[in-house]
Image 1 (cartoon, rainbow, N blue to C red):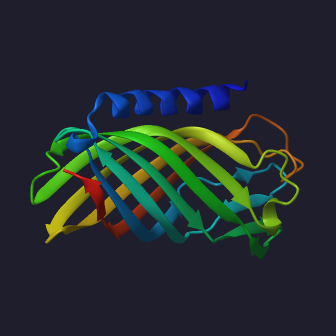
Image 2 (image 1 turned 90 degrees about the vertical axis):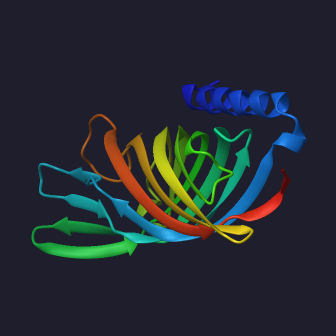
Length: 205
């Protein structure tokens, strides 16, 4: 079993044990469709020959499943699809190609302001998976990366459906074999996602 699979399995097991130890009547479950913006903060690569690959800012469409075990502790599973482009620069010329991303994560959440308040605020962190697709990444050998994610979520109760404002940072390394002739260690990436959504209650307290 690869280290990536072991890491994801361990995190899923921990979340499952916490959920099983909490009575269903004490849990609150919500599902929030989200829309936001994806912001890459690091170039994929800048080779010595002058080649430069940079992922462009894009729209992020996804959802967030939240389970509140108590007023202070919860779990989140998130997913977001980003239709984007990869900008390639070489010798003062540029071109863009379809380069899409999918972000998935499983995170534990700590509520700084309890979840049963009109205004709640949480900090969260966990394991993330990033998968690349599109014409720009057809030759990429390893299209999936696993890393960490940290974030914050502000929820404002608007009747029974809270407005959710989220910010997440994804920290991981991307192997570039097949994308460029340059060789070396995987490149560290730091991607930001800002999102807005509405938490639709699905049951629980």
